[in-house]
Amino acid sequence: MAVVRVPHIRHRFAEVDGVRVFYRETGPAAAPVLLLLHGFPSASHQFRRLMDALGDRYRMIAPDYPGFGHTEAPAGFTYSFDRLADVIEGFVESLGLARFVLYAFDFGGPVGFRLATRHPDWIAGLIVQNSNAYDEGLSDLARAMTANMPGVEGAEENVREILELPVTRGQYEGGTTDVELIAPDGWTLDQHFLDAPGRKDAQVDLALNYHTNLALYPAWQQWLRDHRPPALILWGRNDAFFPEAGAHAYLRDLPDAKLHLFDTGHFALEENLPEIAPLIADFVDELHQENPLKIAVIGARGNLGSAVARAAAARGIQVTALDRDTMDVTDPASVKDAVAGHDAVVAAIKGDDRLVPRGAETLLEALPLAGVDRLVFLGGGGSLEYAPGQRFVDSPNFPAQYLQTARDQSEALEIFRGSGSTVQWSYVSPPPVHLIPGEATGVYRAEARDTPIVDADGESRISVGDYACAIVDALQNGSFLRQRFTVSY
Image (cartoon, rainbow, N blue to C red; front, side, top):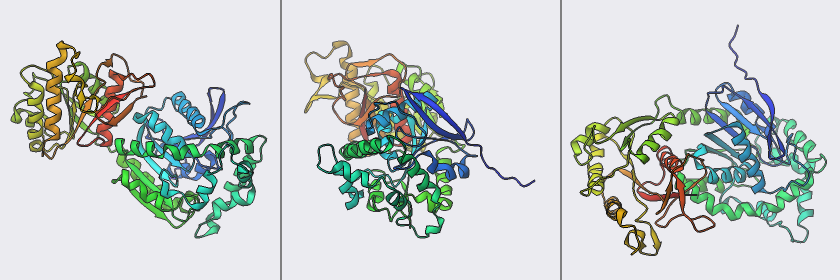
């Protein structure tokens, strides 16, 4: 019998804060995970053919948002992009998804980027398909639609005009090269759901809330710059809403992203699935190569070093634990021999007699000799500034028992910043005071900056578990190169 691999697709519901979220799922449970976030005015059914094409290789999960498809939201649900993200966040947590490739199409961008900024550790890679995050990616038509806001005269009427069948159909067929390749099922089913009771009201609320996404563009772009997720950009260049310039704009913040343009419209999968599916498979396979990342953790018996080693091992990274019994961090030959053959080094150094800055100098010298070009150095929070040019370590009330360690860590930072070494280093600082015991939650912020990240109460704090996760993220994503970054809630 011929071997034909057609996956079974299961259709399920998950309860999330009173919302009954419908989702489609296929693929082996242990396979790489793709979270497929749909656009307007569609739902998870837009991914049916993609799931047929790749569902035997990957675990693919496609939920319907509240107000879309088969998902059932309670009366009084507030339809905003923040709330959609809240529900999908709860959905991800309910399925226990720890890490996945995010596929963001159209509305999937505003929902997905909110997830990414809340949970950077969730994102193993990013597939962007006609989902905009840049000002130049807005056409005149899109600008006119985003100008519809609460209180704007005629805004609701303007939105209701686009919720009818001719417009729904036009979003599928507009810009295509061969309209015979566009199945009528998509736009017919979309309109069926749009015409259901209460659905157009929900879409009006979302459309009038769309301007909040534009306000977040700078934050999303900063997230891309800071975290550098591996990315595949797929774009129908004839999109009436999001023109080709929006695709190229991603390369400013993700210069290593792979960009592919297609002579089609907004719903590029409808016409170009045969070309797009292999690109997705190559991208995901490259992320999950059989040869996992290999890192050496110097100081792996210490509190922070051991936390990083555990977090890395939990993600399938091969970890070599090093300490003073197995190498001398001040001897270039010893370091070279210990780290050779690894992809990266994490250094958590502590000791007297300027061990920290001496170790920093040795690592910058020895790693190139060992053929290792990536280093994450666990520094201190004392070198952060509480005011421009005013470091915590220099303040009169800095705790005396930590003063010398903080000065050594500050000196190490200056060594890195002044170095001409080829090593792609990152220096990570915890909050100045509150690096606290605790497991990882996956909810934290990491930014390249010289001042602490503070919460709404002006406090900077992070658990050891989340601090370790941020360090592993920086390794896996190649982020914060030749920069100091800090982590907090």
